[in-house]
Image 1 (tube, rainbow, N blue to C red):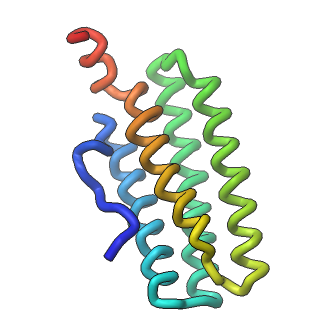
Image 2 (cartoon, rainbow, N blue to C red):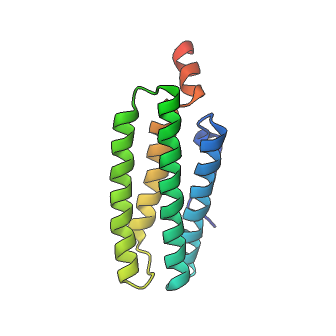
Length: 136
């Protein structure tokens, strides 16, 4: 089972960003699977740490791509990234304090993060957005 599966609704039209989104999703699913299996401890903490590392690298890459392409919404997108990382850090701190126990609210946060950020906001910077503007 998984928290969420990759599908075409998550395709932002930029291969590198899609690859990184898939990597983030895979790690989210591993955290979900660990919680479903009632796992705690160092293995779970490692997954959460890895998810944080991959996310930080992705946000850096995504912001660089937006700068390269002259995306007008970069300032607000950076603020959204900062807010997500702040929330993620809060959850990671809580999970660490509880010895790797993952709360349900963290999984809810992850799912909302994916659906709102990728399906909503990230779609605005890729080539698909330019095509939709031309058609609409």
